[in-house]
Structure formats: structure tokens, C-alpha cells
Length: 567
Image 1 (tube, one colour):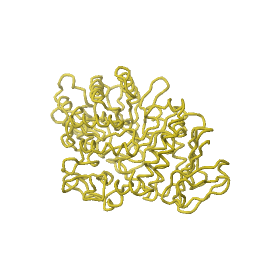
Image 2: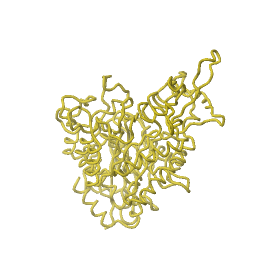
Image 3: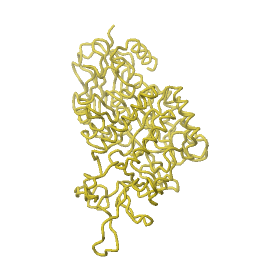
Image 4: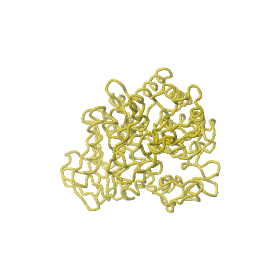
């Protein structure tokens, strides 16, 4: 299978036309998220690090990754495993040094793999020097964070109450009293993660400095964390409005208790994205090189994400991340997939000709658990065959599952099951570390689901994934922004069809049976197609011909990629 797909890829590259040249690298990219603690340990302490990532960059090249983004590697007390940053321009010792970082960048550039960093602008750690200065009201930092006197307690005018009823994402009030400053500070997440005040120009200046610092060190872009939470509504008199009850929860301390109309998706956030985009575009104009990109993490409506991308006058995030397919489950049908895709495409494609598809991340259970192991390949095929960029969480390309974890002195997080070490080989600790133990447990089935073993199995999840990445370079797949470049639809309740086409030259037809029964389709084309990529459930062989004028049967959970090429 591999030799055939590589052969067709090389042929396609020779005939790429002007249309392909109009596609910037990120628009059709294969993006890959690394959770650094869990990718590769180089020093035997059981925790992944930068040297470990560097040692595995050839693997990313092997499987066709365009760019990888790293969850935070900056100095941090690790209250939220790096999303509580104490120094935005230093590497935490657990991951290595700045020299290790520079070596990783150099190796990545040598291989042609781009590096994207997590950018966490909404908040810092409460151990950040900026917050300590703000507590003391040092010059320039007085209003660096969101502070407020609070409300006078009507029962006791010597006491203060929180400024509003806002509840944090992790539960409990968003306001915490600081006895030294004698004011409340805002934190949309943990109380150890105080929110910065982006209404203050000095904050914006400092964060642009952070972006420039890492751009100068050679990074290719940033994934912006928690974008919807950057701004909050403040009344003209300086007070903060209470949020209405949502009806989704009966617990006043639950985040779901309120409708977050004042603490999420405020319009100044959109303007801030435009400011950052302008900065990145200006940096490229001065320094040359490929486009540096912004990925925006936002569980927001597609209308809001459309504004994040741009408004026709200003441009914002290149990739507002599309999480729609992550809501699919084991019972989801082809019609559900079409509906999920339409929710994005009806707005984002029609207005911006932009699309991306996210498989998973460090905050959500793995595909094998959300949909069932038998559907991992199906989802990988869907997200890589729909037009635009694909975003893969490490390990999804080999079908990793959630791992049962227990609270330890190192970690006690309900998201630990999807953050366990990468499974490289059927050896002790799955090849993740040479040390005696790992920070989170290794999956019990690692001897089956690992990179080394799957390399040797023709229709393994890994080899299917690799074949999909090779298809992204073909003429038909790169023609997605041209008229007739793609289509998708549910041919029946369970059968999804995706077509990628360079009309008159090359066409791929992808057929996916989402159901547990045999299905059939009829009269799809008068052209003769060839099977080029098959799921494990397919009885066909690579190279077989498919006459689509008649009836074509699909086994339960079967997926096939068919190709027509003008001779």
C-alpha cells in the first residue's frame, strides 16, 4: 500500500498547477498537538521534555506532519500543569533549558517541521513577578490585573463581598480577596491564575513582547489558549454586572449555573486578535520567511469564530479551532457528520474559504473512548479528507485510549486519562522513558497499540494515517479552494461520501460506513476508480478496480479511498 500511495503522490506533485500555489501552508496543513510531559522523556525522570521531543521529530516528518504545537513549556508552579505561567519567556526546568529549546527549533527547521507554541494570555500564575508587583501597586503594574474593591456587605459595612456573581470555569467565585492589596482580583480559572487586564495598554505591550521574543527564537506561530475569556464586561461606573441564571445547573458554584454573557466572547477580544494578527504579519514583512500563524482555542459559536477569523477589513486568527466533530459519539451517523460539518462550512467556508477539523486535545477523552476503537480510523479519515487543515492530538494516529489513573502526589486531574505517555514500542514503559516509572501510567494494551508494532501492519491506524497525509499533497486534495474542488454528503443515514477533485485530471471518492451493518450505494459515477487506501474492515485490496455504475457494498465500519486519474 505504502509504495502505491507514495507513487501516486510523486506523480501528482509533478502536475500541480497554479491553484495549488495559491494555498498557504497552514490552509491544508496537518497539525499535531504534543503534550510535552507525555511525548518522550530523555533523562529518565518519567516526565517528557524538550530533548525528548527533539529526538522524535523525525517521527513527525515520517507521518507527514506539517507543524506541531506544544502545550506550555514555560516556567510554572504547575498548579494547572503549565497553564499557570510564572515567566512567559523562560523554559521550566522540568522540560529543559532555552538551549534545549533552540536545539529543538534548529532540528525542526532542518526537517521542515514547523513549531507552534501555546500562548496563554488570559492569565498568569499568582507567582508571576507581574502579579507580585501588581499586589504592591508598583508603578506600571497597578492595573496590570483586574482588581476591584468589591461590594459593601449590607449586613456588616466593615466587610466586603465579591464584585459580582461570576463563577469560575473550575467552580466557585471568579473573585478572590487579596489581604495585602485589600482588593479582590479576577480569575476565570483557578485562584492561582489571576486574569490580566487587557484594557491596560501596558499589558498588551508586554504580551506583544512575549510574542516577539519567541518569534525571534524561530517559532512558526502560536496557539492562543482560552480566547473567549480574555475580556469581561465592565459597566460605565466601573462595576461588574451579575450574570443571569442559565437553568442548566442547580448548583450556584457550578460554571453551568450562569449564562456567561458578560465573561465570554466580548467584542474587544475580536479586536485584540486583529491586533496580534497585524503584529505577526508585520513581523513577517520585516523578517521574511513563511507565514507565522495564530490558532485560536475557543468553544464558541461559529458566528463568533467567523469574527475571530476576520471581518473583511481586518484579519485575525488564521485557524479558529473547529471542535464540532469532537461532539460525535459511538452512535453518531453519517448524517450527524454531515450536519456537524455543515455547521462550520455554512458560515466559515462561505464567508472565508477556511476550514479545520480537530480530532482531540488534552482536555477531552480520546476518540477510542468517545466513539469506540472501531471508529478511530473512520474519524481520522474524515478529518483528513474534508477540505482544510487537520489537527491531531498525539497518539490518535495509533489509536491510543484513555488510561485509568489514580490521584498521586504528582497529579490528580480528571483529564489525566487522555494525557498518558506516548506508546512508542512494545518494551518496558512503551519506550517513553528509560527510567523506572512514568508520571502517569502506561496503557495496558501498549504492546499492541504502539508506533513500532503498527509500522509493520499494513492497515494499522498508523499506516492509514500516514497514507492520508500523503494524499494531502495530491493535485485533487490541493485543489480544494477552486470550483468543484470538493463535496461531502451523507448518501444514506450511515454512509458518508467525500469527494476531492481536480476536475478533468484527478478525483478521489471517499466512502465511509459509520454503521454496524452492511450498506450499499449505487450509480455513483461512470468513471473507473482504483482502491488506494482501505480500512481494516474492507475486503478489497489496494489496486483493485471499482465500477461505480453498479452497486457497491460497504462492510460494517468500512472506509475506502477510491481514485480516478486521467490517463
